[in-house]
Length: 247
Image (cartoon, rainbow, N blue to C red; front, side, top):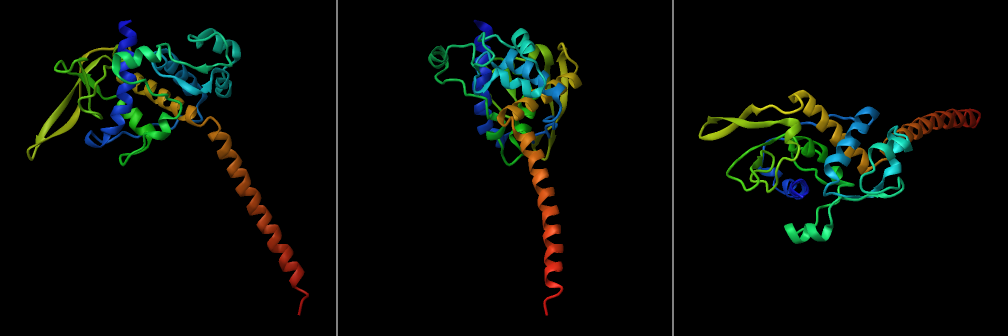
């Protein structure tokens, strides 16, 4: 139950964080992993194991994961925790009624979260990538955690076991505190590079999930443009041939 409660706080914090992003640090550029199937598969694993504790993806079916190279058997064996049918949508583990009763709000659906969190600092993917990598211990908060992208965030860092514990280092410049970097205070299961890689995979999956057909759309768009260019050339030569004998 404690794990579920902490995961729910993460769900609520993601949404609130987007609203306060303007007051935090600049967002890092998220890596583009839309065409990296291995990264998308790992991102799907992270999403199912960590995000589905409280979030749903009501517009995404498990069998759609075959589009990123997973077989139906792999989906059944490794990713089905909230249902037994690969044709079902991704539903959260937690009861929405309980979530609303405990926290006053239902955890948001994450199907299109990567498309809806853009801001003046960058894209929705940039926000999510930075947000998931800027938690730090803050014992003055009820959850024991804070976040540089969303100061005073009302959620814990449920992935802290992977990242470990860190504290931000600031320097004073002209009376202002400027963020300079991180000091690791407790190691996690992953190195900093491994954790960044994992968050890049997770964000890549969220981008893909927001529009699974985007790679197909892009390829089709290129084909259409090439076709139109070829057709315009043919039309131009036909026009020249037609009018050359007209006086």
